[in-house]
Image (cartoon, rainbow, N blue to C red; front, side, top):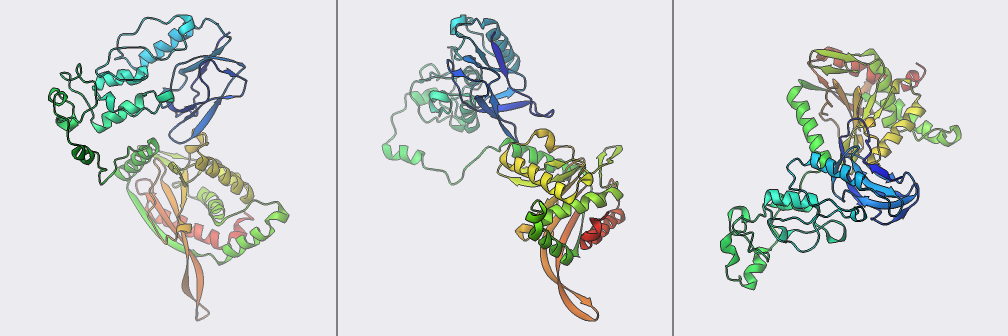
Length: 445
């Protein structure tokens, strides 16, 4: 019995995933657990294992395709098995995803079902293979396929290659398409190839070389995660009444305790507890007494959380991510340290489940290691606050009539003035500073 392998749904908020690589081709024999293909969301990457032993009978997608969750990707089965019904079902999914598709080619016979290319007329002749999705997009946009750089398997032009031509504005006019057989520089608007270009004399070699000189700048399409971050930050700053309070506390005891924990970690079986872990622990305890900051502002409703779901801002190769440690107020310092490191590592490696990237009731972002003394963190909607942790500086205070220096750690709290006023926010900061200055007492609470 043939088995369909579909695009999994990685988290309830994920609608589609991009196939980054196929590890198999049609005709390959696979064992259960072998990696069939790799795919990614805008924040994580995954490998899809084979659900059983079998032979790859058909592949319906290609590298670079943005595939809706639960849509068919490939078929496994026995050699010679009739999969025509599955091929037809997959074709129906393709048509639903692209309602403006061109007239379909004749249905493939079962033994030909593995083919994923369908010859069709296109505006510009192209040598080599081109995927159906790429061909469809090319017909819609009249792009200059002779200038395409194939990035698909075996030199195939795929959808992203055509999209790049669209982005660059490399097109061919309808009047020129029939006689256009060799790539030329277009003289039309935005470099479009027009009929006059087909009969133009060849340009001198020097001029040709000058035309391909590298520009003084580079345009790079924004990755999906950058678009998500941009949208979220713009929404945050344009819809909230944000205000930031800055303060600092004496970190002498905190640093001493951290040094003690580090020295005895191996003997006590403790995790490598960092200053950031200790701040997360203190925030998780103190926040329970300040419900307006452990909340979501939902237009005409305030959602107050009974537990603290602490979000941790993490700098990753893909961009900013905020994984969540749920019910962090119930964890010991050691357990919180382990949980925090686990989700941070998953975020940095791009393997985190998307469900762990939402649901935070409050966020902590730490720039202290970069030497920042104060800053204005931006709230993650619909949260009502975010704490920025700053670096440690030496400051002076008077003790018994004498000036003494001490290590001061800065804290920057941004809060939504729609949800709470300045005084309650300042009280939270004051209580948090006391808790951090007396961390040994906080651990007994």
